[in-house]
Image (cartoon, rainbow, N blue to C red; front, side, top):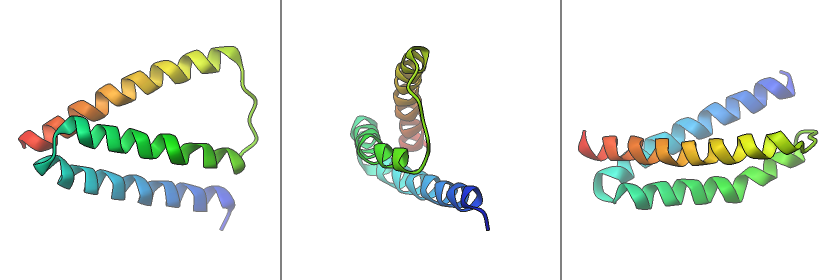
Length: 86
C-alpha cells in the first residue's frame, strides 16, 4: 500500500469519527461550544501534518487559507446547529 493511500484512509477515518462524535455532542451541548472544540483541535493537530509533506508558503495561499478558515467555522457552526435541531 502506498503512503498516499494510507494517508487518505486515516483522514477518512478521523473525519468520520469527528463528525460522529460532534453530531452526538451537538444534541446536548451548544453548537458554538462544539464548533470551538472542533476548530481548536484541528488548529492544534493540523501543523503536525506539515511534517509529512513538502510545502512552500506563497502569499496568495495565506489569503485563501484565511478565507477557507472563516467559511469552515461558519459551515461547522451551521452543521452542528442542524444536528442539534434534527
